[in-house]
Image 1 (cartoon, rainbow, N blue to C red):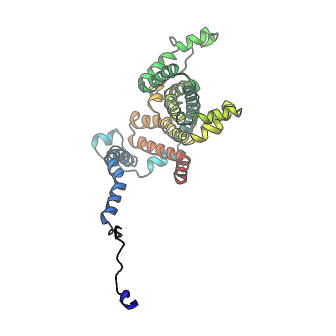
Image 2 (spheres, one colour):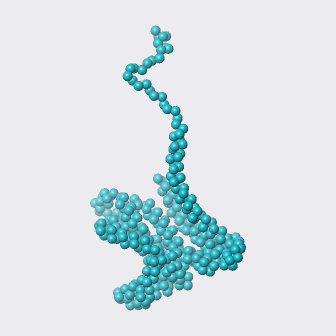
Image 3 (tube, rainbow, N blue to C red):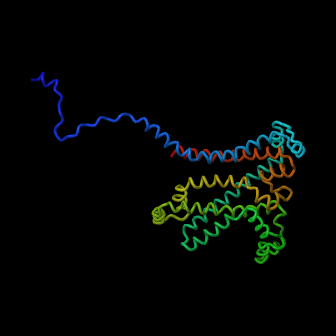
Length: 328
């Protein structure tokens, strides 16, 4: 009986479903997963190719010109005179280049600090205003931000005109009678002051509107809890707002440093880097040497050094951003 039952296959009870054997490995699933992961890169590939075509070629061409002695004569005769690192050596040993570079760094630091401080205050104000006042202020910020650089520069030239400017007229009415005919573009500090006011005015809307958008993502319960604990506005910003929006502040500062450091239109259109080149920044200096003096190789070398200096200044922010991505 036991021997007979040994070779007998046991049947499942009636009404039960036999177990389904596991399906074979789906080879198409791996290919589908790879296609799904690669789809975003394929979608942005045309944009990357267009960006490379629009940016890579000018950068490469500029780099090649920086190794040449390319003046008006060589340009007309279509001759190429290679100088190696001669243009770079001349600039790196020139006191004018380093004075301009130091001036550009200070100019950028002052403008970015004022932009971030002003934009943060206006963004916090937007978050506290009612709907109507917030709408009016937002419209004013958008109009200031959307104004073309040349048009904005023309407006500031009118405002700070020595004879007919509204600023001098207003200061004289307030009691500063010596400002009635003051020439704002006759000195280095005063010219830089006008340029700084103009750049800050054009940049604050970007920071303010983005900060307001970030504030809308923070739960109101956090601010309510801070107020119940007796925290001041500064303590609330330092302990609640800033830690949550720290990536925003880092990325915005990153963008503003790039935007201010490469600012050319405002500086050149306002006073062409004057008086006597005392307000030239590196982009203006490269343009004057390259196009104005027709030393195209020298101008290309200065612009390349400008990019390298900007990358050196941004290395700290690159490290912070990469660290944050690793933490995520």
